[in-house]
Amino acid sequence: MELHFDELLGKITDFIKTEANTKTVIGEQFELGEFKCVPVIKVGMGFGSGASESTEPKSGKGQGGGAGAGVGIEPIGFLVSRADHISFLAAGKTHGLAAVFEKMPDLIEKFADKRSKAKETA
Image (cartoon, rainbow, N blue to C red):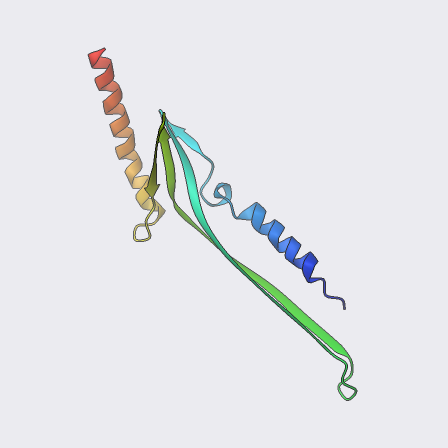
């Protein structure tokens, strides 16, 4: 049994590249009126591996090995932009991603109010 750690590490890295992104966690960028909203995530990862080989005459020849990886992905908020202004809308640990979606109606209402005021003054 041959152990190919370089090959295994390459496969794990490729998997993380395809899975650890905002599209698979939250979704893609979207527009809400004049606002562009880009999801932001935090990614943490760890790797571990080991191998052993024995050539001791009494126990015979043997080898073994193992590897593992872990990935943690957490949505942390949205970058929200309008014209040349950009701000970060945090999801917050205490309220989670639900807090972001709770604030969206306020954002829509502010946008609608500004738009109607602009029409009234025009």
